[in-house]
Each structure stands twice: as structure tokens, then as C-alpha cells.
Length: 494
Image 1: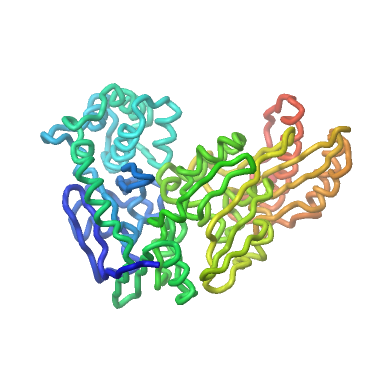
Image 2: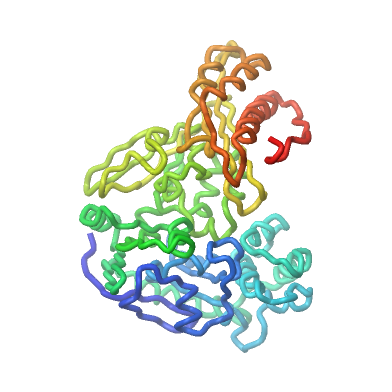
């Protein structure tokens, strides 16, 4: 429980200490930077975390280390900034005022034309430059997934990133490195473990001091909106103009950002971001890599959390299908009481989860794969990167010593009102030989498991056909057979 109380948040903006109170719970970092501080280098494009024009760096202490991450200012709420360092493009030049290594490389390699998206691109590449001294082309492309450029093309931008990497960040050529020790000291002082309450005529912002304080606050305010990464809630504000007050921010809580890897599996606190969870999950489940790197862009992965993706109950969330197929469990907390339920049972129907008033997702546990078990996950979307799923299918199959299917878990998102297992298809597999004939039977059974809807992402027929074909792909891959890429009907044709 918090030991003290404040009515203002404190953070560093570039090289100035800021203390704010009396702001609206839905005030975004982008609006505050542009309208209040006139830092107009940060642009507004999509206002939903897709285009990257609003990218800034946010530094925070994680396990004693100062980490800077690219984030979307357009959907990041000011209330989440307590004890952080916000860095805008105006602060990325060298201490002597000259262009930074990234900025100079962008000039030298002609990486900018219209310039609108360039500040966000520079911010993303600056974060990469600080964190990775030898980025591969894949690392650079992953860092730029959340930055759209419609003018220049990415080849000169990638070349700029490669050129910048030849310069090592030092106190002489980078402001953030030069101020590193002082920044850590200031952020430690700001992170005093106090509860923060911000009142405004449009609503209340609450920032708990620790996880126990969160449990107390949420029990007292069960109708509050819990905000972790705001990659979903941010759009409630910018696109739907929803009232989200009162808001409880949790992204700063170390107690929800813990991870542990054991022989039995991996445990993720609900506040662990996609970026932070990546290495822990891939260590046990390398099959998740392709999916994980297609969840939003780098900024979204830095902000969004696995726990949030579960808690919001979206039928097209990317993480529930593979976690259900892996037999994950979720721990829920209300006050001092905890209970653990299978993740598949957490989703009841569209918009409804097995969560009592005042109860929140505290952690998720993913068991390790059995020896010899097959597992894979596939995402179908209109765009490869930065797109929500038309459907997401995850498959787990374990065979016995005779080559018969001993257990099977198949889960799809985008096929029903919730992430849902394919019970009929699983039943068609259990006890049968892992063969082409068995797969054909299970493929047909999928039509009994789901009645998908048609929407702007895909038609019902397309979803069903894709789901059935993914089952065949999974079978072929487990047999080591090559998967021939054939032309499939377009969404309109299907």
C-alpha cells in the first residue's frame, strides 16, 4: 500500500523537470507537447498509434537500468508519465548543437522528403541507436515497423540507420548519454511509491503506489478504467471520444512487470509489455516469433501489455489464441484474494469476461511444451505489419508412442465473439493417427465449431476457408513437408 500521497505527477521533459496537476484524465502526451509546450516537431497523423509521426522516446528505470523506448504520443496519456523521461525530437541533437548521428545520417542518405514523418523516424532510429550498437537489417526494419513514410521509401532510411550505427553513442555526441547518471538519480527520486490523485472537472486520474495499492483502489472504484499501455484505451478517446474517468494507471508498477522462466513454464506479470516479454517467451516458444513481431509496430509493442490484451477480451486479440493453445492460466486478484482460471474459461462471450467488479488480471502462466509436442500459430491480415487480425489460429498436438493424437488444443481469434477453442475439430483428432485423412476430417469439423461473421476485414467464407487451410499447413509443417504457396481467392471472391 502507498505510504504517502501526492496530487501532482513529476517527470523530465527533455532537460527540464516538470510537475503537473489538475489535468484531464484523457489528456494525451501529443496534445500536451504541441498545445501546452509548443514542441511541434512531434506531429499528429493517424491519432491511433499506426503512422509513427508522433513518436517520442520515454525513458524509465527497469531493473535498475535506464531504458529508452519509442512510443506513440498520440495515444499515450500524460497521467502515465510519472517518474519518466520524455524526449522529443527537439532534444535529440548533440550537446554542442550539431546534428546527432542519426539526424546527420538521414541528411547524408537523403532519408527525408516532405519531412512530416521524419521526426518520428528519427526518434525511432535514435532509440535503436542507443540500445543496439550492431543492428541487423531485420532489427532496423523491426524498429521502423511503426513509422510510415509515403514519400522517401525505406531504402535510404535503412541506409541511414546503418550509417548511424557506425558511430558509438558517447557523452560527447549524445545528450541522453551525457545526462545518464543525473537522469537516473532524478527518476529514482521521483519514484517515491506515493499514490497520486489528479482531479479535473472532466474526471479523476489515479496512480497507485504499488500493486497492493492498486488492489485497494480498484476494489474501491470498480468502474474505473485500468490503463496499462493505452494501445486500446487510447483509441477509445481519440476515435470514439469516450469518457474513461476515473482512470487508474498501472504501467509504472514494478510488481506487475515481473517475469520468471522455469522448467515448468513462464510467468508474466500483467504489466509486462510485448517488447519485454519477447525474449522470455521465445526462449520456450520460438514458434511465437513471427506472430510477436507482427503485433502492431515497435511503439505499440513497447507500450502494449500481454495482460491488457487478455483483459480487454477482444475477439481479435493476437495473444489469446496461442496462449489458449498452450494451456495458459490467468491469475485474477480482488483486494487480497486471488484465483487462477484457465485462460480459455476467462472469455465468456463478446464483451464479457470472468472478472468480478474490482478484480483485475495480475499475471499469466504459460506451461512449457511437452517433449515432442507440435505447436504453431498463424496470423492472417490484410497488411503484413501493423494490422489487426482477420483471424489468428493456434495449434497444439501431442502424440503418444504409437503415433496417435493424445491431446489437441486448437484456438482461433476472429472466428467468434471471443477467442475460442475448436472442440469438434479437436475431438476428430483425439485417438486418431496423425495422418492426412485425420486432418481432412478435422478440417471439415471446423465448420461445426464456428460461424464467423463477415466484416470489413474478411468475409465469413474467407475466414472459414483460411482456418481450414491453416490446419492443413500445420499438419504439413509437422511432417516436414514443404508448403506450396498457391493463389487463394481474394476476400471478395471468397
